[in-house]
Image (cartoon, rainbow, N blue to C red):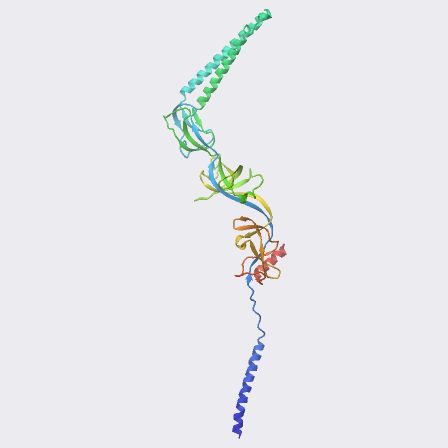
Length: 387
């Protein structure tokens, strides 16, 4: 009998043990505390922006060219007796230096002859003036009706004066011809080519060399239409940075000399001329800016007021994403005023202290809740407190 009761009690005992184990497990779970909800908001980085006054920098490119080039010709004829060692292609001269000399003997003789003619004409004039004085004294004792200009020797005096002027003119020409036997540079010059040699006879007017003026270099640069709006009203005199890049980078200071006042019919661009002093460093210790080099020109334009400068990768289809006060994404349509290198200048669509998103979620949506990088948020708070 007892054995049967034991069999009947076994299932109840098993149920009791199971129920007790379940309660123990529940108790153990409750002792660990409630599970915290998982934050699924994407984390973004932001950057606060503020409007600023921005000085526009305009960049263009052009070829370095001489201020002027001269095809030098002989002003007198004769044999070349000597030339300067620098009078070769690539040689440089200071203004007024002698490049070569033409034989002078005949021109010295012509000068002496002209000087003699001047002396003779002066003597003849002195003699004629004396005769005119004698005639004037004699005329005082004669009837005035008999005194004529011929009697007073006025025609002879005028002729003597004219002869003296003519003799002086020939003397001046002789002096000039003799001076032109020594051919000098009209400016600081770079010799491009030379067509004569010692012993060669050159005729008056024949081309003997080609020179480039190296007192100044000029760079003609195109100005695109979108840059024209940012040019100052008067560009003449603005400083410009001239940079020629190559094996060695050369940087020189220049100035905008003038606006050519024309729009190229092919490119529809305006043109400015930038002038650089002493491009070959002949008169100063500066690096050479050689003719024919391709140069980058940078100069300042207008100052833009209250604009925002943003990296281009933050602006997509004229849209910038910001985080509002509720930590939600908001797209802003902006107006790009100008592109400056890797940046956009924006003058509409943003306000001061907007938090621009610099690292967007993969699929950003309007109103999407986000979490701002705590390190950056703390940094922005410190920056705000320091203002």
